[in-house]
Length: 274
Image 1 (tube, rainbow, N blue to C red):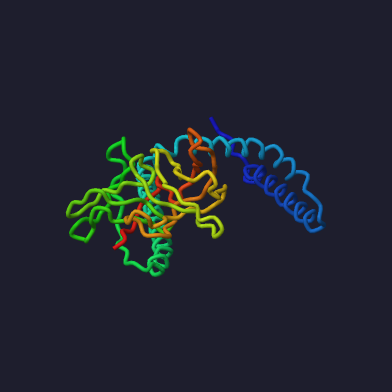
Image 2 (cartoon, one colour; image 1 turned 30 degrees about the vertical axis):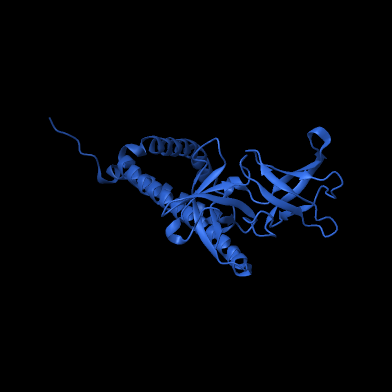
């Protein structure tokens, strides 16, 4: 049986028509663009294609976010570990720098205090506070080999702390003013008062100036210093400020409650009078 062959012109007819239409469409598109007009065909195609393409992109990004750790988890975990270690190291360095600054400021202020004192001062660190809860005492880092003796007077830049009552070669125990067994001769510093009494502690954060005469001129706000009577404490050491005045029991005299000049709960370094 004889087969019929398709003529060459017909064989390429569809391709030629498609090429012609494409050329005309391209020319028309360029003409529209040159005249600043939009191409209706391109706009329609974009309107149809853009929404599903955008949705597909969002799905792809979501999948990447949810499953990316499967491929990068180990590297990210290692990086997070290194970052945490670095942050911890920086926090430690910052804490050390802050502590160094605090110590520097304290030592700078104390230097002026030391130079202003007529007696030589021996610096000591507080290494224990109230080892026996029944007594208000401190243990300091200086002892007999440093020249510290029983009844040595202990002060800070703020004022009087107390006296040494026990000494070892490397440490000393200090009876603070707030202890119930303490006692120091004291007087009002105000020039037209100079009222004299005995300052005692009661294991609280306040002090009592007792044994004042009924006619003693003492009032709230008066500054109280050591009187020098008794031979242990030199005169003029700051003790505290009067915050209340009242009659003693039995109306035998007056008593004043004092706010200590020293914050005994925050002592870190003290000085022993030599």
